[in-house]
Image (cartoon, rainbow, N blue to C red; front, side, top):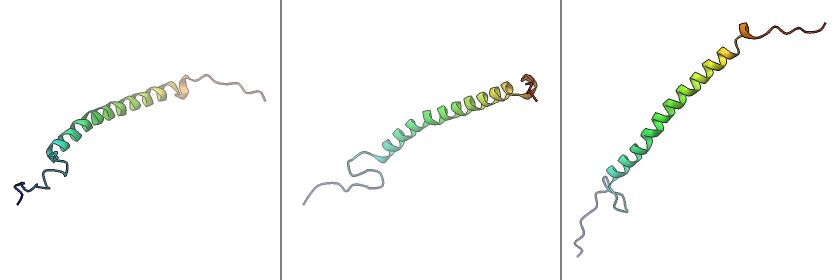
Length: 67
């Protein structure tokens, strides 16, 4: 007879790490990713607006083409 306690597969994996710990580690790794993706989105949008202002037709010189 063995005196081992049964492992609850819902809360622990085969190597003995509680799944709640793994979930918290994965969540803490994903939060900076979400924050940085929001900052990247704002940077790209700002760059897009600035490039649109730079390339507006009213500020470009009129080119003379030879006929």
